[in-house]
Amino acid sequence: MATRRAYKERMAMLAKHVEHDNANRIERADLIGWKDALVQSGLASKTIRNYLGYVSTVFRYLAQNDKIDTNPVEKPVAYAVRKDPRTARQEFEPDDRAKIYRAAMAETRPFYRWSNLLMLFSGMRMEEFSEADTRDIRKIDGEWCLLLNYDHRAQQHHLKTDESIRKIPLHSAVLNAGFLDYVHALPPGLLFPMLKADRDGKLAADASRKLSVWLRETAEIVDPRKVNHSHRHSVESILCNLGVREATAFKLTGHAPKTVGDGYIHHSIEALKAAIEKIPIPAMPAAASPLTPQAAA
Image 1 (tube, rainbow, N blue to C red):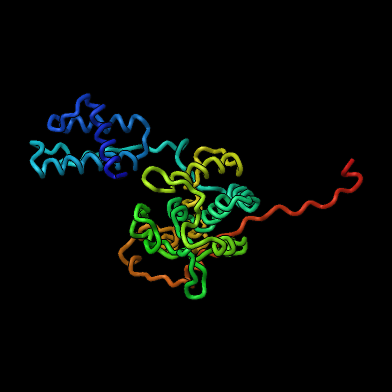
Image 2: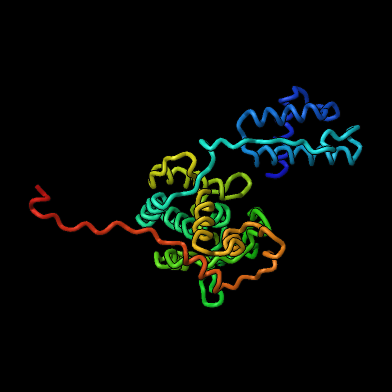
């Protein structure tokens, strides 16, 4: 349902641009003009690539089934988007991470507490933890891990890439904060049952909406270039700057290996746990000392 709707919406966008809905009249120049309009609108490079990918798939299908005379995207439409450093996404600085950590530790609402701690100490994607299952929390080789796979995921819940399927040892900061007590108090099922599903049964949209507001209003991170996805930038940077191999950092965050050789490395849970424990725990403010009479005055 969601995929079909996405294709229809992208084709509708193209039809609005060319001011007609006759696929057989679409020419390569029309697609180039639409691409230029998308670039001018300020959309991200990845978004434009996705939009062009949707319509290219439709035209390829139509051409292969003799529904149109020629395929206007038989030759790929090239594009270039120059990033504006004033709006480009940034990682969280140590002070930002400290603010998020302190706000999360002060939270009494389970979703806000645990989702932020998971992102801080693993760089997990929103859909990865929001659509996880309590049965995905397991002890492997003596270490508590969050397993990202399809064993207990609902049919409509998907992981982004093949590399997203992985085992993430839980950082001691998450464990020491009482995460397992939260998990074990829940029945088998969703890790965050308080999230509301959208019309396609997915939970990530509700998680994103809630955490975006929390980041601005509770953690007081107001720079619009810093968003919850910035955790992924921060975690990978921290790991690599502390000497963790890129291949290991990518294995933890679910990014594709850079080389064929890196893909042959099979990381042990012990090695992954050692790497993730390198992520530093931000300092908590010292307890306030009793006021002296002079200070109170």
